[in-house]
Image: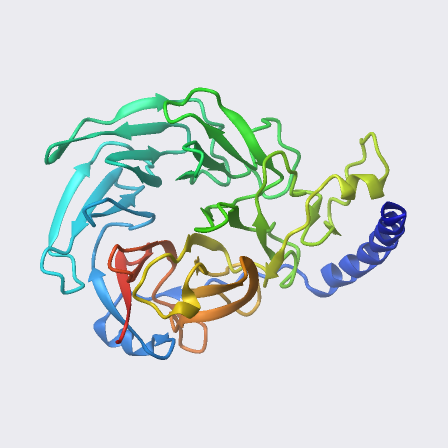
Length: 392
């Protein structure tokens, strides 16, 4: 009976969504507005608004095109620099919240983007390859190539890595296009494999570009923010928060959000099931955020420095929009979890958009929690790494 009611609901949803989406698309003609870039200046720090009780300082500056972050057991911060092909190691040896020891540990892997640490090993990802670096005493081995046949980059070449509670290596593979039917089944997925690259499978599909993902510290569930398709107007489609479970299809490119149909593509013409059954075969998002904010970094907070309110919630960096009339994003957002379920998004750090939202001095990317419980995140446009701490 419940399935019948759900199917009736979805039939109505298809009809209503189709009309509503076309009206919104017609009213919301795609716009391009790119805020002008401003170089970092110390005076701009005053523009930043941080949640009450927190402080922010510069952990490191002029770190190439600092993109993604990882933290080793000894509190060394690893930063990827894709254009330079480098991995930079930063360490705060004086415990004053500022990196004072800087080393280049890799300088020859062009396009290196994703980075993850497991025990003392470092995993790196480029568009098509995964590399492993092992620590031997105080030095690192030369990078060892694990696999070199990831799908071509296309529109989304930036691969990210994570190692799950099951000790498997997870890799986000973005779509090759904005919105299309992919030829390679590994595009628009998260794949997983053994730590040596063997036994590779697709964990979940229909994910356009889930750069940021992480496992809940208590439940072990995998969560991530997916970037919606471009050129559907200022308000479509929303950025998606998904509970990413094995074997699920999250709908891209035909379905987004809670069973909303793409206003341009519609449902696939060649399908072996009804529109209702097709929608039922996809997994709806758990929550949505406003369109075109471009979520990148995603990390659960499991530190001890911040108040209990933040425990087991997630911090997300939004790199910022270009495909909407009024710019949004360019900030850090906190995702509050209540009883292991997401409850609400809250602005945590904002102010990178300046001059009446016509300019910006920060496009945010990687984010991680340091062992002392403070939070660090990157601005890949100015090579800045910021540290957020709680004022006790």
